[in-house]
Amino acid sequence: MALVNADDARRRARRRLPRMLFDYIDGGAFAETTLRANRRDFDDVPLRQTVLTGIHTPDLSAQYLGQQYALPFMLGPVGFLGLYTSQGEQKAARAAHAAGIPLCLSTFSIASLGDVRTATNGPLQFQLYVMKDRGLTAELIAAAKAAKADALVVTVDCAVTSVRERDLINGFRISKRLTPGMLLNFATKPRWLTDQILRGGRSVRALADRPEFGSSILEQAVNLSQGIDPSLNWNDIGWIRTQWDGTLVIKGILAPDDAVRAKAAGADAVVVSNHGGRQLDGASSTIRALPAIREAVGNEFCLMLDGGVRRGSDIAKAIAGGADGVMLGRAYAFALAAAGERGITDILDAIRTELRITLALMGVPSIAALRRDGGRGGQQIIGR
Ligand SMILES: Cc1cc2nc3c(=O)[nH]c(=O)nc-3n(C[C@H](O)[C@H](O)[C@H](O)COP(=O)(O)O)c2cc1C
Image 1 (cartoon, rainbow, N blue to C red):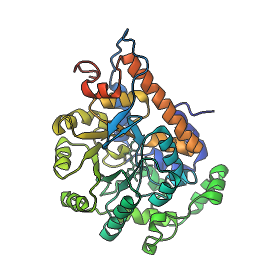
Image 2 (spheres, protein in one colour):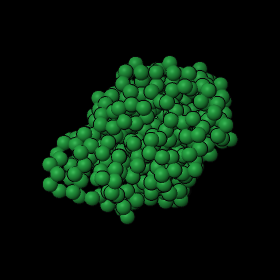
Image 3 (cartoon, protein in one colour):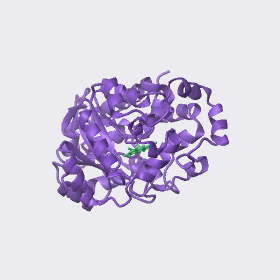
Image 4 (spheres, rainbow, N blue to C red):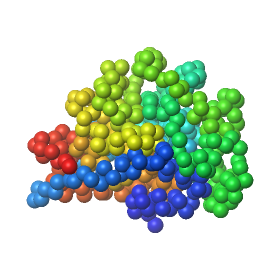
């Protein structure tokens, strides 16, 4: 049966994935306060119902990150998709392509950009973690150019890796070797295990020529997160701009001043993000932070948002609050784990349907109208 919604995907992913991977996707930093706030604050935003408008098939296309797409939401960067199901990155890229939206491939991917490019010629972006090893960083940027990535998305909220206590308990990204506990846990998930043994990748392909990162995925995962440059600062953004002349996006902005600074540093867009509650625990939810950021950067600058987006109505709230587009994270990662490429297609269909119905019942003819004036002549369509 098709996945009904993101909660359904999460439930079914939990049955399929080893605990270590389910917790890695599901969890947040420390007390998971921000993780919960992302959801709670979406739930608290009311939408205005407007009747007798005759609007029944609103135009859901949207312009963001320099291009026009079929939908105002896309697949954001999520690490290790290929561990949730074999060829996870390729499956995600194909599902995104079929829906007319981009996938942003994480630095922490099993498949390389080249592998994904071979699987689809659809819209593809690359998410960059700036590594201490600037040679490797420059190589990653060059690979993004070679794969004709539509945008380089530099994640800046992860320079210092936070603690996800569920990962501590499970040993993921801590232990460089399989532990007896992990093996026992894998054995309880035979479908996942068989798929990984028969078809799964054995290592991070982008590190094939980098033996210093180790050879197994567990080893590479630890070394990659330790390899992120903790001294990252605004001057480095200038350096990246010299390496990349395409669309440059800074991901992980939560304060209006930082958004203004990103714009001044040459970014074409920012992603309002708290990394899905996985970094600074206690930080504001993204939907709450958004309006002040829009105000600070002006109306023309491209703003994306992620964090807690599970439903079409969340997307309507984000766009009415000033976002040009939205990135999905866990919603599609769980769908991929639950049912592969078809799972992502199910979730994209479900969210598209909900968004269409939401706009129709709000009496809003298009995403462009919702973005322009909150849907109705400049009046606030959301509020608290
Ligand atoms: C399992 C997992 C892995 C992630 N890996 C990355 C990553 O490699 N790079 C990155 O910029 N963000 C990463 N993120 C953060 C997402 O891009 C996004 O900010 C977050 O998932 C949004 O919150 P949501 O999952 O509640 O929608 C990851 C998130 C999750 C859940």
